[in-house]
Amino acid sequence: MDQITAAASAARTAAVTLARAERVTKDAALTAAAAALRAAKPELMAANAADLAAAPDLTAAFRDRLTLTPSRIEAMATGLDDIAALPDPVGRLLSEWTRPNGLVIRRIAQPLGVIGMIFESRPNVAADAAALCLKAGSAIILRGGRESFRSVGAIHTCLLQGLAEAGLPEACIQIAPDTDRAFVGSMLAASGLIDLIIPRGGKSLVNRVLAEARVPVLAHAEGLCHTYVDGAADPAMARKILADAKMRRLTVCGATETLLIDARVAPFLLPLLVGDLAALGCDFRADARARAIIPALPAATDDDFATEWLDAILNIAVVDGVAGALSHIRRFGSEHTEAIVTEDEAAATAFLDGLDAAVGLWNASTQFCDGGEFGFGAEIGIATGRLHARGPVGLEQLCTFRYQVVGTGQVRG
Image (cartoon, rainbow, N blue to C red; front, side, top):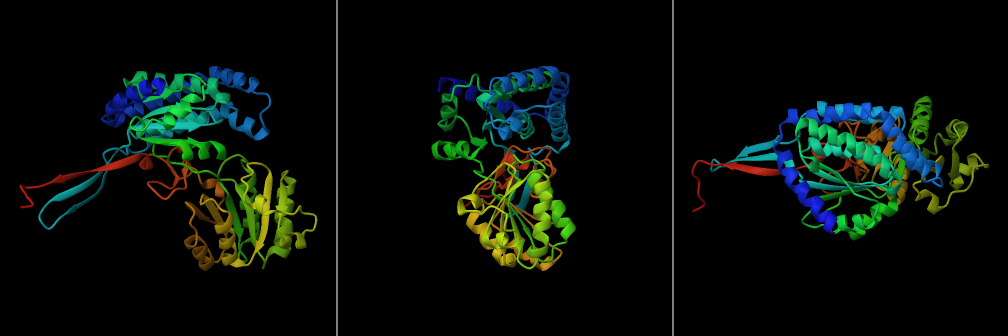
């Protein structure tokens, strides 16, 4: 607790400076950090190789999330440049109105303060989260998984170089000093020291944070995403979208885990969809109606439909129209991301309006649930709660607001 108290106190002091920093200063820090990442590519690759060598028993999916490649390092640097190019979210006039008594009330965006970020295997999260918080005027304390400790440390060195070149305090971006799990518990207990905790990782991590935190949490526990192929879907489009939604990257939370297909088109379209994905190495779990069409498909259980596979496994259910799709989603979904493929605007409207999910898509892959694809530059995570922010969390969602009230001598009397 002494470590987190010292880190949070330093972050609070740094956040005061950062909240008042000009956009040009914050952008200079980001572009300098991006340049440092590009220049340090050999060091980053070496640190990542050491992390991978120290954890030989990782699953293929976990190893993929942990691995840095030259293209992924460039993507990190590009993300920082993209965030620098975005408008400054701090100080925005969100709304303004005048009361009958002449008082002018203004709602103005301001930073959240000190953010604690707890994440698991993806080292690039450190760069994305730090850059977003910096631009949004908040200090951040990063605690990555023990498997990525060396990689995160090397990335942090580049971020500090950016801060130094811009003249901003190093305490704007801090990382856990070691892999001691007690640091996580201290972060979760740091009420009054940390303003917001954002977990990003597997279900067990997020559930622990939600259960133990004494600090407000912005999170999603699972990405149980569905793609519904409607009876009015264009078959070629459906095949293209589903292949991307499931197989582009298996380990992202926006990957489709369940195909829902309208009974009207399932007899001829389902074999094509299954054939496409089987050729890409996908396995399946199917309900009785789907197995009546393709008997060789393995049977699905309710537990299968409730599983976020993050792997080359796709659940399949045949449903009766939009109503059937929505019923299935309400039962098994996690309010993350859902998609419909259809040429029928009325069906699309009924589907999108009937969702509780943070993100609904029409004729597009669920893997577009991503801050970069939304134009946010990057994202610090996906939120599926009902308060403050939903969907990809970018710069605007990392701000709160305050009021300014301007009078001309009014009193309540």
